[in-house]
Image (tube, rainbow, N blue to C red; front, side, top):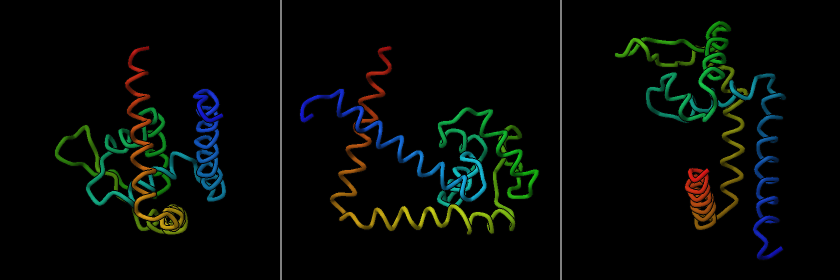
Length: 146
């Protein structure tokens, strides 16, 4: 399998799909949707003002899917959508209920991710990120040719 790109690609795709499945199963265990989990994740990890547009751009999911989740989260009292300078863009803020939900869901996920990553030394962490970014960039370049 050493120099067989097809077999390596299959192995890499299996790893990525299994990783996606780990997160999907956590969302299910927390009784929230995948989309809701990633919205909470962004709100907990990003230190700046986050708008609906920012969340759509960061999640790489259809805008309609993200906005539906945001509306549901607002209706259930987990977030507030606040007007910012541009009337078309709203800041997304966690309510007290949303903070409690994040404490019991994504904060646990983030802690476990950090723990797993800390089991690699700094060079391994950097190598993992750099190689994954390089592969993504190469894929992006190749896919633009289609």
